[in-house]
Amino acid sequence: MSGDRPNAGAEPNAGAAADETARIDPDRLTRLLGGPGLDWLVERARHRLARGEPLTGTVTLASATAAQRGAAERLLGRAPRPGRSLSVRLDEVDAVLRRSRVSPAGLAAAVTALTGPVVPLAEARERQARAWEEAYAPLAALPAELADWADDIRRDGLVRRLARSPDAARPLLAATVSALGALPAEPARPLPEFAAQTLGDAHALDDGTPLATLVRSGVRALTGFPDGEGAEWRRAAWASAGLLKDALSATVLALGVRGTAALDALADAGEPAVLTLRQLAHGAPRPPATAPAVYVCENPAVVAAAADAYGADCAPLVCLQGQPSAAALTLLRLLHTAGARLLYHGDFDWGGLRIAGGLLRRVQWRPWRYTAADYRAAAATMPLARPLRGTPASAPWDPALSAALTEVGVGVEEESVIDDLLSDLIP
Image (tube, rainbow, N blue to C red):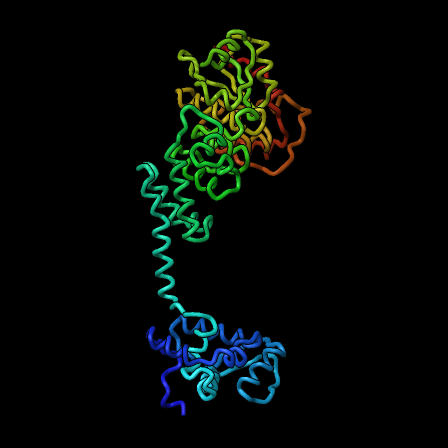
């Protein structure tokens, strides 16, 4: 009986498919095959059609429920079988549908009637690829210096992860291109103000949004800002393109740094200056032309002692106050760009090495009495120094320093060597 019927997995043309669907008894089909007990079977058949495979052979459900077993037994008119797995021959289902005239064209037509037209996977993939290609079209408007970045985000899947679909990706990329086309911002301005004027929404570039992630990635490509993480890093990344995420809370302590009327006045008075990111964005600090070295320390006590000892005669000194803030990174980059040679000193302990290493990844500096020889000399004068604790860290500027800390085993705070540091701060 089945030998004269067409292959159950053959793809009918559009006219034939419509005719076959019209001949189906929808009410009987729903009762026979459309219930929840057989939805797994219909789904398996649909997947085979999408892959271009024939609806023949056996499909198996590993752990079938009583309802699923009962539905299969009623469909095929067979007695209950033992075991947990449930196996059904698709050829038998096809024969039942044809014989009963519920679906004269068989199982393939029944699946289409129940679930809608089946799009072959190869065709679906091709459509998806075309849709993504069209979604990337806004990137063509990027400036030439961002061409490599545009290629990178297409290859690494960043846009796909953020947007999830081509329909969402195209407006996301259009907004990204609009934002990057207006950068760097000159003069610098608050990030929400920029977002409102450029994108029509003051919160469009808030942390955590796909647009903020994508634009910040483009900013890093535009400005050469290094990899990183955390709130301070994000603040500094925006600032590198003239966008002030939080222009007042990020500060840096400096002494003898000039370049604006306020800085010049404090330098002349020999007083330390607390600079905000906003001030740095609107002014251009500079190192002295006659002595372009700028000293950088970790602890404010060094700045206070230098101001007391030398006042207006002190060499330029910048203090990180622990982990470098966005303001500190911005100031050091400005000074480095202006030709300053940055010399750094920090605590001789594992935390100090981590701060120094993190700074070195962001700004170029040379050690200022901050080598293995300097540590051994300082530790030798401190018999009561505190034991070194914590997880060891590396010292890329002097690998011997990490080994020396492990060997000697004591920490030396920056405050303990202030006299040595002060001796270098006379221009």
